[in-house]
Length: 270
Image 1 (cartoon, rainbow, N blue to C red):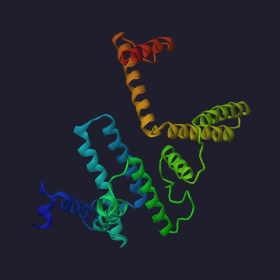
Image 2: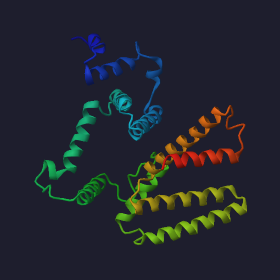
Image 3: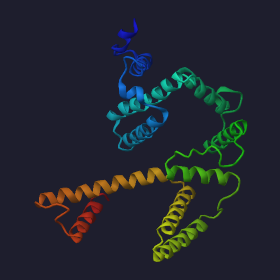
Image 4: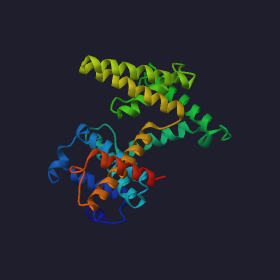
């Protein structure tokens, strides 16, 4: 099968996708938009597609998940194509890299270590292996390698976990709750000064403590906030639908009316 036939082969799999990307990036015959893209311009789409995968899973939209995973896979193919053009790496070398990492990080599966471990012990072993990898990459600081481009909530969680591994952590969850009270008071005090920078700084501290509380409670803060976002959406849509039945809209309704409908939506979910 020649490469042109491969592009139109519905069963062409991974070779087909790689050839499609090669054609899109061809400097003479490719798509002008695709040719112009760089690691930097594609990175935001990569993040967006990862969130769309998470969204489909959150909604249990299994009919959409295959397509969203394909969109995410395309991002890796895109970065691989740019890397190959710059003689940095290829799709094959990317696959080899992650394969080597998975084998190295699972000695209880691919090596001689026993599989008779708890999930907690396996996580601890994983972190030990990762720490050794960072040391080999000249990442000496405890917080080295926590990506700057992560969403702020997720990066806060990772920073806290790293610090906790070397003992910089509260031992009593009640102390974290006390810190929440302290930071709330500091935010109130900052608001009274009307200093925008101080307000932002204290608000950031408050969010950071909330992430710490989630960690001590065993709650994923990203998942928790996604769930609350979904809940807010459901209840607000209930308000809109109820008002529409009355020939009204949120713009025309009073806050009291909307609050009553919110409570109806809340009661209906119990």
